[in-house]
Image (cartoon, rainbow, N blue to C red; front, side):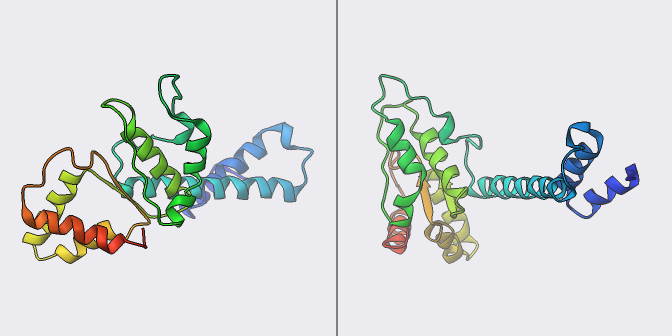
Length: 195
């Protein structure tokens, strides 16, 4: 019979979800009629699901979304919006990203553009595709800091290489530094036919 020390080992071996599911299977009489293989299969499935969830969580953090909980399943389809559930579902497949198409979301202020963009970004991370989210001012500030440290090429690559680059509030503020205008065009040129 498995003791508490045995279950601690699952965490140490980095298969904690497997161990938690195994404990549930051992403690719940409802599982008594299942075969050994079915019980182990459930534990393996629990571990796979937990690892996939952690991967997506990490990917969402690295994309730098402001709204980490944004997802297409939680989008409100209000009657006064000209947004359609089937269109969002089609966009959430992310086929448009694979086809190297651009998506522009236009709405009045407060219309949910940022939420929808980030929800589609989360959908892309689930595929898994690489995603980078930024407001242009933050992106240009990051590029300026990198340039001052002699790492401009690396910074440009961080915005040019992802499968999906989300620029939120694009051109709502002017680009004052001429170098930043060049940076923006360099990123867009590098992404042409790639992302």
